[in-house]
Length: 175
Image (cartoon, rainbow, N blue to C red; front, side, top):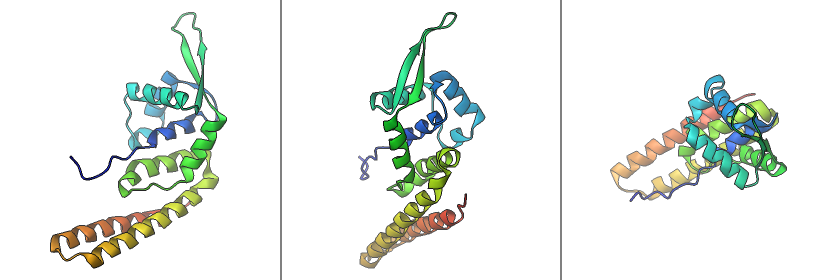
């Protein structure tokens, strides 16, 4: 068993950003996301996963759905973001990720959605994340001061360099 605790990913909340401008059908949205945006370079989703996340967002009250009867095609669900969904998305966008391993997907997904829908919140997200990264660096310094084992010192140094690279990358973000 891994010593790490499982992190409940909130990455699926990024899908709410695609409903800000207009309602959408699952299939058309999946097709759009997978072929006409660079979102899939951040997070590759199988179609079945995508539909499961839409249902989850619906059950959590972040999306509403209307069944649209089709004459020449099966009935389809039209999804619309709710007020609760808008508030959840806005909160998610400005909340920094809590672990470095979430930077690669969740943080970049936040940037992707924010640059399209909440440009005014991008720098708040970056500033919030920068503060968290600086806290991570302080924690690594504490670990380093207490460590005597050479291999552990190497690992902590490696981790510090990763975090420092994140900080430098964050400094380059300017929208």
